[in-house]
Length: 338
Image 1 (cartoon, helix red, strand yellow):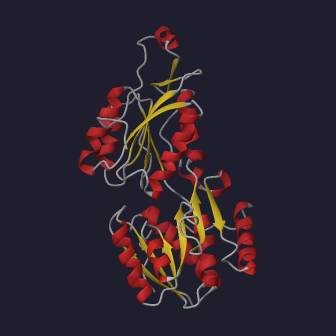
Image 2 (cartoon, helix red, strand yellow):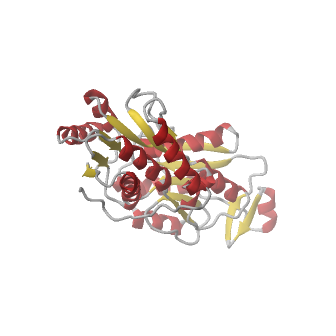
Image 3 (cartoon, helix red, strand yellow):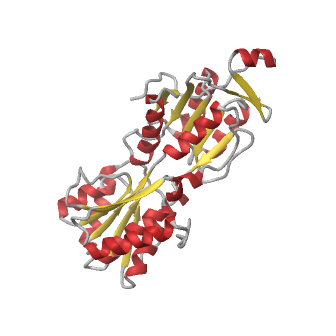
């Protein structure tokens, strides 16, 4: 649960003069003031529209807790914040004195940017489908299309029915690009594979995702791409296999999860914290730090379930990616069945 009563974010307050700034360990950068944090943790607040258990948000929460455990930040958060309440929460945190506010604004892009412009001395790092807004709103996204492609190769090589089902939340860029990468990977090793695609229009509705998965299994899908919670439950019940997304759930679903594309938010969060502490935070796109070369993504394969020759093939392609010899296509269009 949140440790906040009133959700929102914070403003970095600075003394009016350079002497005052020095006294509080703060320096100006680009016309703004950010906490210098010499040995002192900066104040971070986060706004989540879903529970922190939800897989995407859980990765941000994990990275922030790690920074908190290192003593680099203090951390408070609000979860299950409705879109129509997001602006109020954001203003609340901004008024409270947060140095850095983290969140996801896919459904409230205009409102969030309006708030950020009203608090130019606060640093904002927001999950977004769009670009940064000067001077102080930076963006990120889960660009884990590289391991998603690799998991597609696993699925394409192991399916027996040549029919794979994909269950997603919403057909927005950060979901679409992962599904397309997965499908491209599967087709690269199996030109006969076909796909079923369903969006449940929710970020967190496990029963709805489970029902969508059941429908795909009834149509003959023997591998499911679990972009949402609930899909793996259906796969386990029906004895089919699943490909994980963002987190590794193999321990919860033994003998079910073939492989997973894992998102690591630490490279993104740690860079933002460092920039705030050093007084150089600015509007930027942090999306690249979710790629494999920065340690922002990785592949997990259950070698007990996946044949050794398939593992070898996939690991060879993984090395090509990390060596810069193969680039996974980024396609943000809505994926279709077929």
